Image: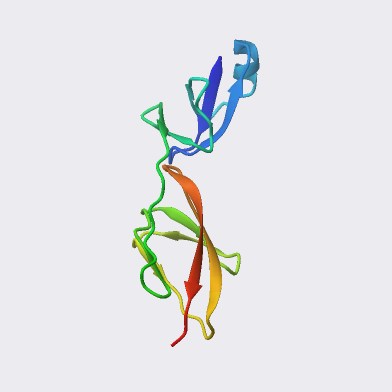
Length: 123
């Protein structure tokens, strides 16, 4: 038996496998859960209507200097300074006083996690 424990967004928190007694004993009483196949993994799948779905690649657009767009609504962004924000507008912008590279992290339950290097060029 194999069970995915997930939150209200569909993010799989962990997967428990073993006998029914082991799985039941490791499933929190108030948890959302569903039985899943052996190929389901927390970092490559999410849950929708109690069914496992494969995460898609997050296709972000960085064509403009200091601007990242096509960010899915509800994406958690890790900024270069280590702070986090949850984006709902589809894009973020930043400014810098020197040409350099910045690393951003993006996490969303329905997409594969993504780390993005953005090169900022001052004029």
